[in-house]
Structures are given as C-alpha cells and as structure tokens.
Length: 101
Image 1 (cartoon, rainbow, N blue to C red):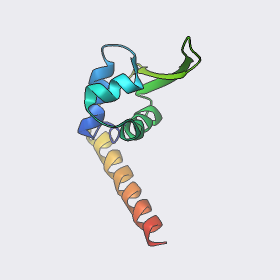
Image 2 (cartoon, rainbow, N blue to C red):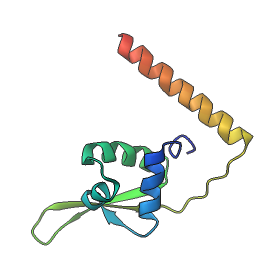
Image 3 (tube, helix red, strand yellow):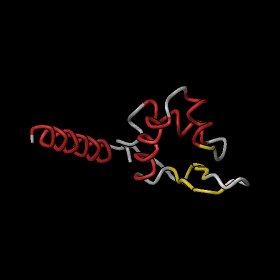
C-alpha cells in the first residue's frame, strides 16, 4: 500500500477523491493530466485497495466510470517501509529483466 501512495500524483488523486466520488474525465481535468495517465495511477491505487471504481450507464447509454475512496488506514512503521522498499526493488528488477528480453 505504501508504494501506491509513494507517488505525489497518486496522493493528489486520493485528496481529490476525499470529497466524494468523481467521474474519471472530471478527475483528469482537476489534476491537469491525460485520462490514460490517470488510469495508470487509478489502477495502482485500486490494486492497493485505496480506491474503487464503478462503471455506470448514463441516460444516453454511454459508459461512465466513477471512482471513490475505499475505507483504509495507512500505518507507517519500519516494517511497512521495509516491505515497500523490497516491493519497489522487485518491481524495478522485473521491469529491467523484461526490457532485456
């Protein structure tokens, strides 16, 4: 979970969602970033269990994706930091191995 919030942009996403659920296009506008980049960060936060997304149909039949915060508590101690560092090193090594292939 710590690695998910280790990015300043993801912290901004959490802050924006603290006011309630937001449509993904509106969230991208508020943050001043593209939707594809936002989706990458939303995916990371969702996998960490910090947010949840719901797909709904608008009155005209368009798919609308909304996100809101999931209940969570982040406890920061030495073990959490150590686990986050190990996960980050593992992710970096995995990416480097994949790019070499």
